[in-house]
Image 1 (cartoon, rainbow, N blue to C red):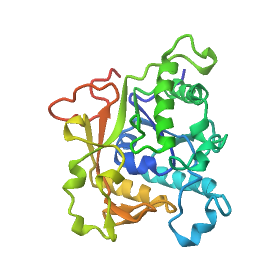
Image 2: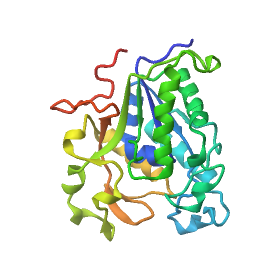
Image 3: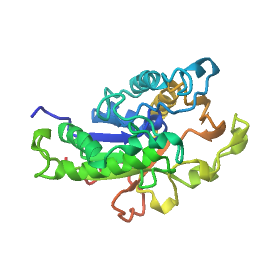
Image 4: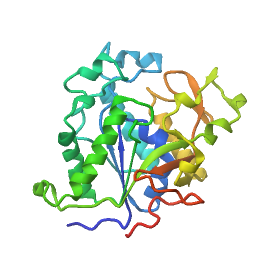
Length: 290
């Protein structure tokens, strides 16, 4: 087995851009500190709505070439964050973006939402056994906001952690490995209610219902507060997703044109429901045997 860096982090996301919005500071920090940072993206985001009018031709109801284009956006974003190991679950295009909940695209046979759980989880379990992360980041059981692909990414990540540790499963996929910590992305309610909405450069602002994974303050277990370099890297990575994200200063919008502040302190809660310490941790690897 080849040598691995001392700290190893795996992130599992549904579409390109999710990683930069949710974890850009975190990825930039650990990559710069020499940790192994691996990103697995489950789809190419083929069903996303295109913001720039000059790229509207990429949309699924026109050329249907948005997926390959977003692969390039993701590569550009990873360069900004200093992450060199980014891969698609089963390879680019293995699973297609399922669209929003209730959309007819949910029922496509190649949609990620339709993927057999153990099939997709086995692919991720092989990556876990290869990269041997101590820490894994993904969404909560609701996928943060109910998108089918986010829910499926949570299910696949959860099952893959189980399979990767199972000594009886898939010996051809590598030596078993136990992930020590699983964290779920979250946004403390105070991060939205405390912002000065008058600074919003867009016509309207998000409400709590528009933001994935909003939780009460006491649920936050880890806070990664970005320094100037990490904040700059995150902003640049988000801006690299040009079809999906429009950045203006310290704010951004998606295709809904609702402004929201770029979260430069990224928060996580425990997947096992541990009661957070009185003071939130500042390291995802705290207490992990390295």
